Length: 357
Image 1 (cartoon, helix red, strand yellow):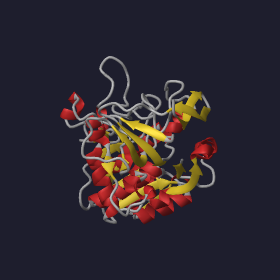
Image 2 (image 1 turned 90 degrees about the vertical axis):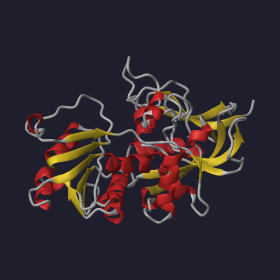
Image 3 (image 1 turned 30 degrees about the vertical axis):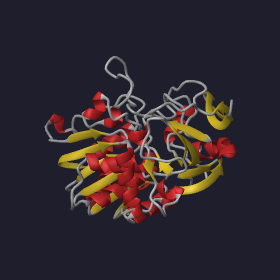
Image 4 (image 1 turned 135 degrees about the vertical axis):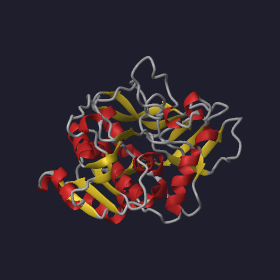
């Protein structure tokens, strides 16, 4: 049996590179040879045992590669074609998909808590930190890479760009809006870029890492606020002349950032939550105006599917956004354990790592 190298979850605090069989291709699947992938913050949660996955699972959910083999019923693609697939892989046929919410096309959540919807790669099926990945429902999920775009130019599309942009989209950012983004990690930075593309004219980024604040300005932030310089809410209210913002985007997943995001909203404002929370959230009575403030709280799981990927790559191809500054480090797949150590400990100004087999 032919084998490949893959990053495998062994146990808490151990993801190792080892051999696994190259997947067999079913009629609706496609086998993609990975040319570039990356490590996500969610992968670090898996590494630390904070998010449960099966032992022996190949991790990773951001694939860029070349079609190696197509299932017998997959049409419109060819072997050797450069493609990406989203981190979320909807079937296109489920109840969630037909309701227009393909990101939630996953295990039944009605009778037990599983909030990850259509996230399958590196969660419930083998992921893409490997030499090959099997893409399910290939017709719904494979998307050709436009000629002239490099792997790194489209590397953010499967997850980070899709998630960050959706923070602005789901909050219905409008021309002339004021937006604040709490936490300028890769997803928060993409939320900044998404808010700019949606027409926001005041975009405030909140962080304390100078390099990330610099990138935020390149991507469209008009102001940056260092939370170490004083009360964040007061700083943001001062920047908006006491009005508050139309939209808050929370991209960290903590009680503190969620609460601040709520407190800086104008009456009737929208809080767009992208953070992944590990404990119950509390909504303060005063910040929520006792439920009478006409506020909206919106949550989002990264939209996937081939049409989403096509649209995101079209934005990149048109010059609408350049996310290359987010790729700060490069590692070979055989060195992925060292890459995890760097990324998990956030050393050397790391934002995203390009992993190449």
